[in-house]
Length: 197
Image 1: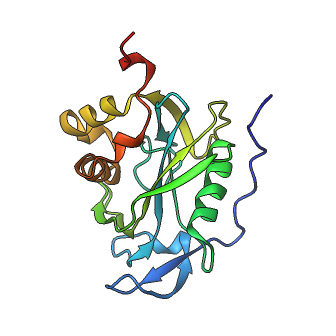
Image 2: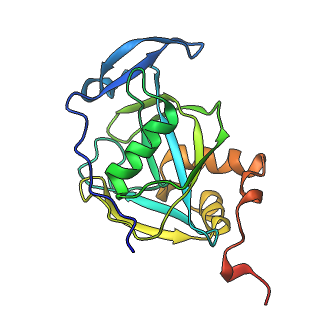
């Protein structure tokens, strides 16, 4: 039995929630206009998906993506629409990017916030709560969003964060360090490759 879902169409006019310096909503802006050299602070999310064996899904951003094309990153990122519940937005984006429905969602870094500049000068400036999700493994990635994906041991991801951060998105590097600091991966099953027989 398959658990992949038809990819829903993107929201026709996607808007993001703008925030003041304290993180309170102050309005909205069309997503296509938000990211530039002077990106205003806005609301986003990051999701790290795991299978039942504790493997974590890393994705490689499609070359058509406006920011950090071709870079490896966490499972899924996105922006809730004005008035949209954060967990509903994560589920929507997982369906759109990967064709799957999360079995569960758990907040792990509710206050994560960062600012980063891409090589072309485009800035990310986000309050970006981080969630863990349990996912099925029969993915159906949308090619305009995801050009590759790998199920990995979270310990291997953290080794890349330390040894080769330039191959990862800047937010996943910062998130990886904070997730390790709060022992967020301790609640994830140990992948079979590291279990003692």
